[in-house]
Image (cartoon, rainbow, N blue to C red; front, top):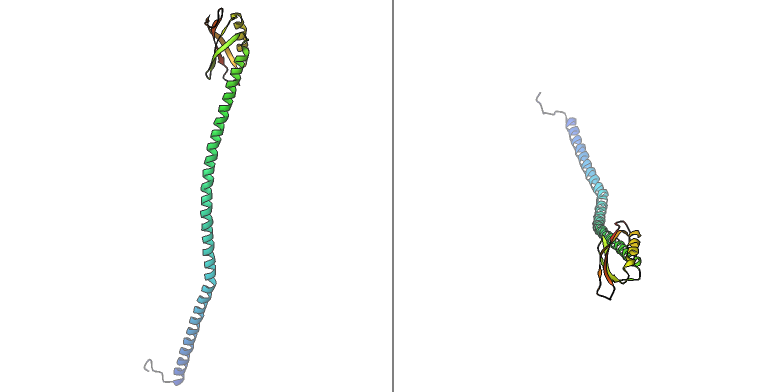
Length: 182
């Protein structure tokens, strides 16, 4: 018997029916696949759009926060600079108060018989220049300077006849400051 020859008509009809059923099933499955793809795109597109919107909002927030962080860092640097300046000013004020205290102590230690004509101040010493008509008051004045907390030593540098008045003596006293004294 030759192959490919179908002598029975029912086989031919059955093959045609099977082709139609297969074609109909294939078309149905194709339509079902397309409808599932469409349904998925309808469901996924809003979620994708929502995620894109959320990402855009997050980028905008990140840009805003980045600007704020930059501003915050600048403010921190400004604060650090101001803190350094404030500390320096406090040190200067403390030094000025210390200088004033030392000058006041030096002036208070002098008896009224000594008249000052000049004051010189360095960070380590105060030099007093003046004249007196009673040189015998100098040892007591030097003792008071040495005993004061602002000074650790005081010495008479010069004592010579003065030009101010007859019988007066010109003098120079150097008082060394205590480094830790106020």
